Image (tube, rainbow, N blue to C red; front, side):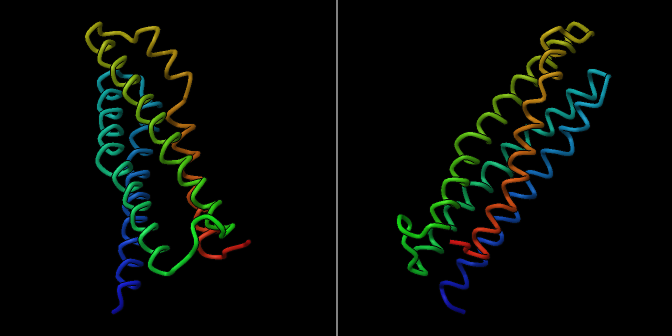
Length: 158
């Protein structure tokens, strides 16, 4: 087994970990958005926040690190290969825009759910955040960008 094959396997495992984290985040997130009972909402948002911090964020960082190692080991030029530049830009959008906005909005929803639990009724801020759907939009954006990144990596269209 060569070094390139080892890095390729590590890259595959990190992609799996990232998608696992996204799934582990989206399931409780959808559950929390549909619940009307404050305790169940709070539990769901805590689960989503845990998945974000424990799997999605580290998985995404690992994808980038192993991807750079793999591309460097193979000898691809990071600045002149068109499909690789497109892949890098999409990855950086996910890492530096989607994931931080998703984490921040999850934290805001969780804080408002805690305030609602203390008052034993939903606050107007919580209702506003639940109507806003920012975490759902950004988690779906990440979900739809993953196949685009895989397309560029596998088929190298330009």
